[in-house]
Image (cartoon, rainbow, N blue to C red; front, side, top):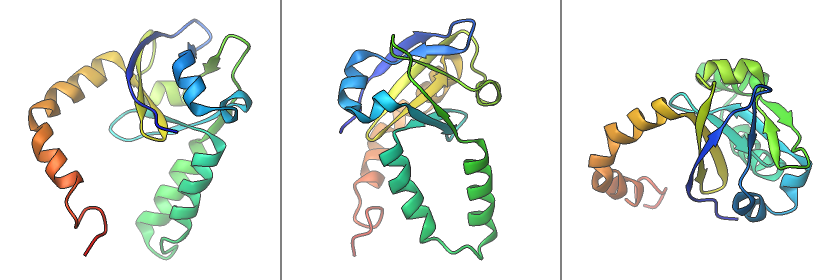
Length: 152
């Protein structure tokens, strides 16, 4: 499953957004059961299938529980994570608390980011994108460097 693309979405009065069919298809049958909505990074929300969130949990489980940052992240992340079912029209309801924390109200951007989706307030995403796109090559070099990828 490879998730890509940028999709403009509107949020309805019940805080629902429609997941595009292309993304639902890429997510496969697991999305029919629903998605976990969690705090993301940089002011976004993250949407995970159960399988992807389980893999993330396995990675987090190997981190030392004696490190304060690990404990704090786990508490903040899992305490706010919520399960959301997709309705018959492929819409998912964003929990009010998470929507508020990400500044989500009317118009949003839904991003496919490899194995999960990110949901951003349009203005917040635009500012993030414009503030970093000029450094794309620098980020690419770091992302593909052997040190970053755990190679020796």
